[in-house]
Image (cartoon, rainbow, N blue to C red; front, side):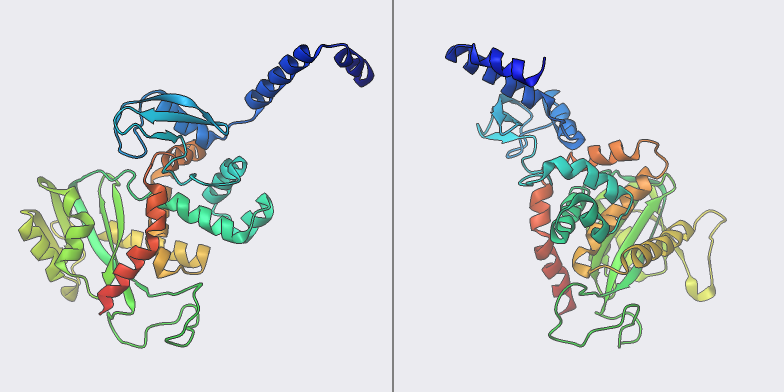
Length: 344
């Protein structure tokens, strides 16, 4: 039917018939919109009772209508309503139609400038989305360590990349600290992994590592009679192992001890140190200390997904799970201030 005949047919309809047709066309338009995979992933969890209330985490909730194309739910406990986006990194985003394409580009480690051009969004938006997504990865896949578990610290030079400097002059990329050895200019990152590839990377403190830093990073994930801890001879690891009743094997670098009893070593962790630093330096040209933990989260998930054939779908599912992601994103600045306060 051509357009002229359609117009003639519409003009012959009564007002009631036109209103009915208009409603049907609106419904057809809503159902024809392509739902982003991220939204679909959230809806699947919530519709199949695999999620919880975004406000009080209660597992009992019911569907509660539609809000601007988003499925609403109502909690049976706190009686508050929420959508599939509430609390997630997608909360409040204006361009949700670009989410899946953004995630695909991020998984390919595309630069922010290229993402900006590809999706026609502001570079600040691209930057904010990256860190909202990374905030949703902080609590994923945090299983206990079992068997032989290696742990060792590595150091990154404190960086204020992207911020105006008022208290010191700019430092050349790749430059070093003015203080020799381990100083408050360096950020200590604890890297821990077992032989089953459970990996944890935690920004611990500024300067030298202390026993409490190890406890805060991995204390809740190492159990007596389940874990054998391998580390260097740092006294803090020894104290941590004694306090937690953990079998501990220390490698003494001073006598160039690399392997103990042919099985205890920290070579896997040292290899992770090297690959992590190359990734951060070569891909991002260094990152700000404020966001360092975010990039460590990214690297951990990248390592977990590297052998999967469905990387994108797995990545989308992971970043869609955390209902505290938006809150964690808002607290990045507070965590940074707390870390910097350990300098004093």
